[in-house]
Amino acid sequence: KLLPSDGVYAVSAESGNRIFKAMAVITGRDNDDQEVFFHIHGSCENISGKTITLCFRKKITGPVNLKDTTSSEFKLRRSLDEVSELIY
Image (cartoon, rainbow, N blue to C red; front, side, top):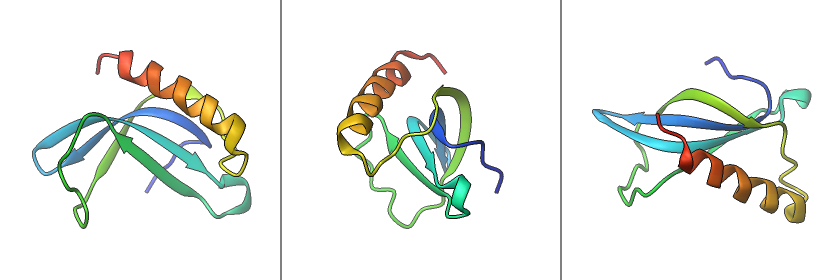
């Protein structure tokens, strides 16, 4: 798996023959404990247990400290608004 630097990204989430608009957050690159979280827009389909491929489209913002809920909530909401306006 190849992952870009920590930050918030507009991505396409592909599962089988379905493609969803999504937002991904990458954290932990500095301490070798890298994690990827993603949110699929407008989907109510259950994807538990399915293979998902993320295609990174655009970096929205730099690193987000998820332990600081006050600042990360603001940054993530603003990023989600920007991702939802993109056409991809």
